[in-house]
Length: 116
Image (cartoon, rainbow, N blue to C red; front, top):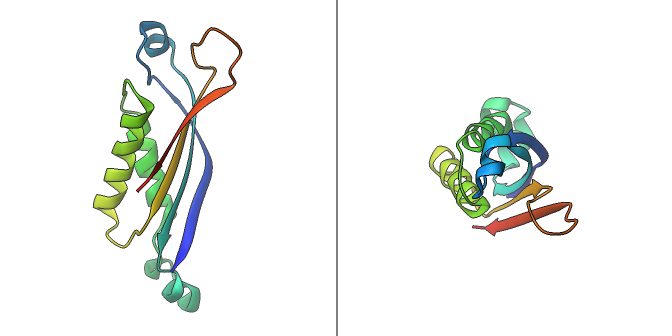
């Protein structure tokens, strides 16, 4: 087993509960890591033997384009879609961050981390 990580995936999305954040959108960053068997591609050096992380990125991108009220919901959707597409994935950790959340005060970002 091994781990694949896609770090710092940036998206402009309209996730949020309040009308203003839904209307204007915001910057979001997703960090994703998951366990998978990397022994075969490590030996063969062939993409067809590996879990193609470009496909994983495209799943994250597609799910980030679907609006959610809550970060928890968007993150759960991403994990569920990854699990349905890649049966060989083991443990997953996903961190979804919203920059400049609408809070009374200076907060750079708010994040939700889901371990599955």
